[in-house]
Structures are given as structure tokens and as C-alpha cells.
Image 1 (cartoon, rainbow, N blue to C red):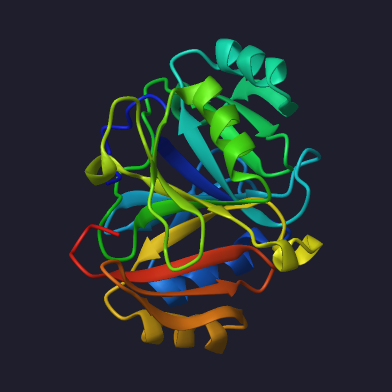
Image 2 (cartoon, rainbow, N blue to C red; image 1 turned 135 degrees about the vertical axis):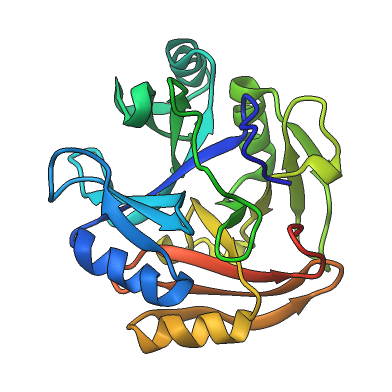
Length: 264
């Protein structure tokens, strides 16, 4: 499961690139109860989204390297330059960076060979998010890809992840864990899109799951604030109840009421 230990290779930061930072912060405040505060000296720049005083995510203006409004998952690395070099060797693209990030971090924006955007974070004074795996906080990340085997090989080359096959019905799915970790250490999943879903609107992407106490209620709150339902509430055996929406700027977010608190 996700923790704030932020082991190398695990997700340690999450931000939303938005054309309207204030509106996006207000939207997620209504859905998850997050408060917003400046993340730097620019009043129109990065804003931290806080849950009971702890950073749960961030929202920032769209940058030149962004392909559109979207949530970006950052993965911790002790050496951003070495991880960039490894990504280039196995077909990844560097869209931006390394660049200075919050709390003395170094960040870089990349795209994997199938077209899914993600980012790197070399910790400084700030290791990453202050709260995860609690209600209204990030609890899981998921990769939709068109080639699960190739995606697994790419990310193993970068982060030495352990991939544990966990097929659901007829869907190819793998649980992702830090190096040497078991399923119980999983922080995310890799889902291979079926052939008929390989349209651009269902193309390769990383998206977050936020834990909630009431999946249906969270989705209803999001829709009331202008979101569009992508996946209506559904029960996943031995996992929980989940739903997915596109927020008012088009960024994809999933919510889940875990079967067990803090787990997926």
C-alpha cells in the first residue's frame, strides 16, 4: 500500500495541470474537502491541496510541456539524471526537466513509449505528499496501456518494480510494488486496454485513485460540481467499490471505497 515513506520507485507526489487553478482547487475542495493554499510566491502559481493540514495533492497552471489538463503521478528517484538516462535508453521521452520543484526537489516530465505521461521526483527537504491511504487521500495509481508487457519492461528498467499478475475476470492486470515487494506492498496497477478500447479517449495514461468512505456519494458530489461520469460505481471482488470521472477541465480521477481501510 502507499505510505509516506516514499520508497524509491514509489509514487510520492501528485499534481493537476489545470487551465484554471482556482476553479480546480474549488472543485476538489467540494468533492474531497481539500483546502487550498499557495505553494510558492506566485499567487497564480502552484497551490497545495491540503487535508487536515497535510498536503494531499497540488494543482498548478498548465505548462508548455503538458499535453493537456491532467493529473500527473510522480515517482521517487534518488537520481533524476540517471533515471532520465535509463528512460531514454528504453524508448521514453523527456518532455521537460530536470527542474527545481517544491521543497528543494528536482523534477522531470516524461512520456513512456506507449504515450502515457508521468514524472520523476528527486527528494530534497520535501520527500513528497504528507498524507496517503486515508479517506480523501491518494491510495492507488493506475496505468492504462496498450501493451502491458512492454510497459512492464519499461518501468522495471527505470524503477526495478515488482509486477504481480492479478487478472480480474478476462482483464490483464498486474499489481505494481517497489523492488522486492509483494502484493501487500502494492501501490498501483497496470491495466492493458482491450483492443476495442484503444481509441484516443481511452489511450495510455496514469490516473490516481482517491480513497473515500462513500464511492457513490463522492461521484455524485463530483458530477454536481460539473464532472462527467466515465465509470459508474461498480463493485470489484476483494477490492472495493470504485467509480471514475473526468473533472470539469477533463482530468481523469477515480474514487474507491476500499474493502478494507487503507487498502485496495
